[in-house]
Image (tube, rainbow, N blue to C red):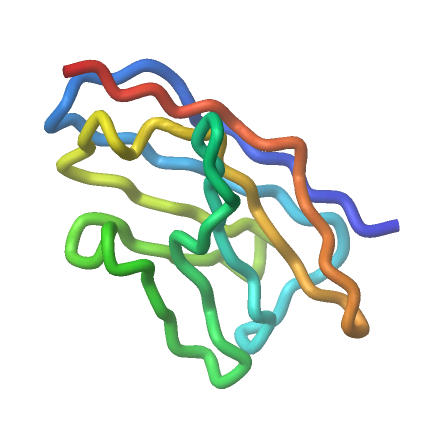
Length: 115
């Protein structure tokens, strides 16, 4: 069973930083296309950052230069380092994994950025 557990969310002031963590069940590899998405109230879920199957990373336009996705395959962990946070970054952040063509999601972690 594929399980993803996010942590690290919270309340932070604008300009601050947070580091989100995603613990994955089973092994993850350097080519596992794991990703972070977010969903704000009344909005569609959107891509924040993702690893590609080639091992590189891609970012949503609104977070480029501020957020960084990383992983530790030895610990089966994926991280999202978020810097220079803005109120518009407020959302529930989800970790996503693709296994044999099926998408799996964690329960999400709330990030709230106050102005």
